[in-house]
Image (cartoon, rainbow, N blue to C red; front, side):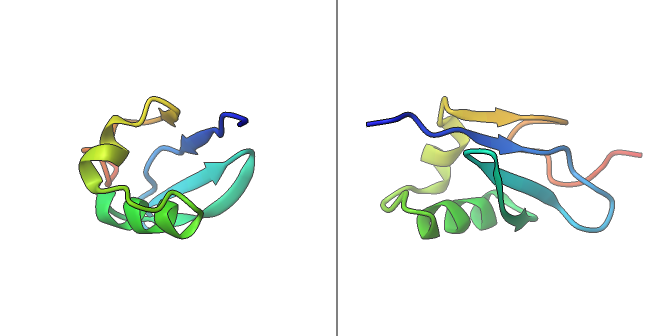
Length: 72
């Protein structure tokens, strides 16, 4: 099985964080719960928020799973 890649962009002021899976934009989320639901819909069934926060294949930019808004 091929390892998938997930990239979470830095938060924006108004939109949230973009979620990229295998190089394609999957969607925009505003919370860890939203990210969890988005990934579940993309085939990662059975994940909860703790699982998502700890997934080693997720690359977080502009802050980790606790950062959902810009700090400026």
